[in-house]
Image 1: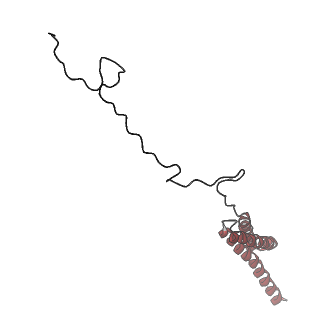
Image 2 (image 1 turned 90 degrees about the horizontal axis):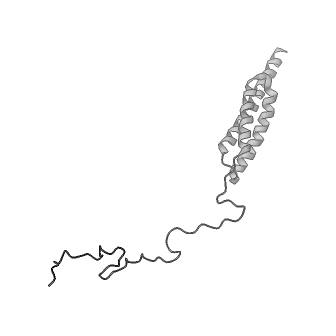
Image 3 (image 1 turned 30 degrees about the horizontal axis):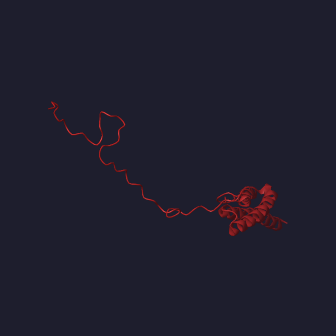
Length: 145
C-alpha cells in the first residue's frame, strides 16, 4: 500500500514541469475573421504623376494688390492739390491693374477680388478729385478775368 494521499487536482498545466504542454485537450484560439482584399473602407487615392502635386494651390492676385496700392496712393495724392499729376498717373494704373485683377478672379485664377475692386474704385476716385480741383480752378480764373 502506498502512503501518499491524493492532493488537490492539478489544472491543465503541470507546475512541476516548466514549458510542458497542457495535459488535457488544448484548443488553439479562433483565427481572426478574414476580410476580402480591397473591400470596404475608403477608396484608394488617385495616382500622382511625377512633378505633380496632390492639390493645386490657388495663386494670389498680384494685380488686385497692385491696384489697391496704386489706388490708395493715387487717392492720397489726389486729395493734396499739388500732387494731382501723380494722382492721375496712379489712378490710371489702378484702373488697369484692377480690371486685369477682376478678370483673373472671374476666370478662377485668383481669389482676392475685393482688393481688385477696391483698387479700381480708389483709382477712379483718385482721378476724379483732381479733375474737380482743376474745374473749380478754371471756374475761379474765369470769374476773375
